[in-house]
Image (tube, rainbow, N blue to C red):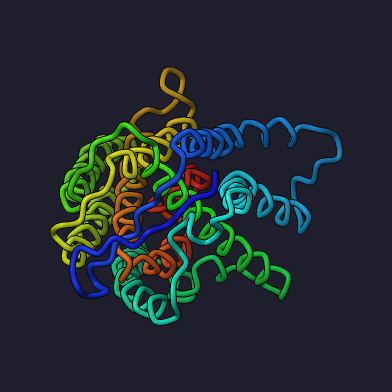
Length: 322
């Protein structure tokens, strides 16, 4: 059943415009399950395929395949489902006028500042060369091919995180049999709780070696972003609770699976990286449910993925970054 999209205004200004998704609840649930399955079990499939004879494990071919896998397990299924349902960009709340995109991107440049400051500060305090912490993934690129690979990976991670979270949220809006809650309440509850859990688990984890400074910086970044977006969300906006729970649960499980699971994995690392990822997910969800700032998630996700960091909703670089 094709989705219909209605702009529900809670104020007379564009700033208070909220995108609400109306579609068949069975279709919405099916889409959420398919996207979650691809994201959660895609890594397992990749591990199986990578053991096949002849699979490239180094060099340019391996780097290109890595980018392809990132797209396949994150962005591909949401994109295909959006085409199948016929709503395309609206499935991610990334449709709208040029003026709306410009407003959102301008807000996104503001949201991009805290992650940039966090990563640059950590790089300087760690004594990393300025070239490396400014250019991020591009710092080690020695030729054009390496630059293109770094650019491709950055784009793939940005698109994957953006499309995965926004699709789950806006399909979650149509889940059915759910309670509407104030968006500000959801943002504050989940966002602040995620930052607090990140501090506790991160400091416990730092006993084994990682610096507690990074823990404080990342948690503070989440808090600043939560407070910033909170100021932009109109007080009367409500969304279905599943619009927040669907992406939060999937992202949390992604980090649990990436660290080995509940019983045989590194639970402290899963809680630490997962809480930061959930905090960032909550920020993205809140932004995309307010028309004026929904495009802000694009500059924000670019900034988050410019460096490997613990702030990404995706769990593809937990071992490297956290």
